Length: 110
Image (cartoon, rainbow, N blue to C red; front, top):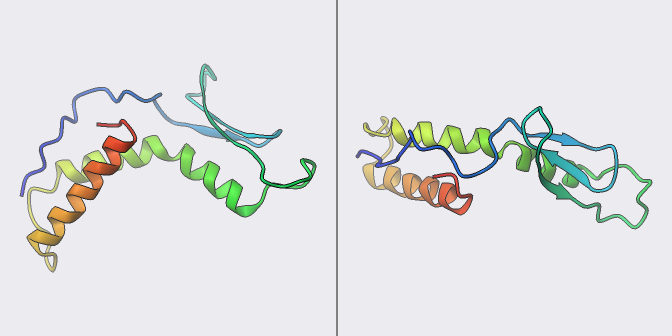
């Protein structure tokens, strides 16, 4: 099974790496180190803004910040899926590939 993926195209999203800034409310997810882009923010769900961020809020921010690296990893996996790994059926690999393609499309990363 060969994945048809255009890996040479530049993604439409802000290039990575992305970083998080927890110096205020909301948590800011910044684009590349030059700081030219705020990619997203995660507002605090807590009533008191002086409280620390919850573990869930920090995990959400970290997951968002990891998006460019995750998208790149998915592109690499799909590009290498020509052979079915041992113990994995071709049907199962097809389902995984479809889910990966859908995830990349949903993020605008294809």
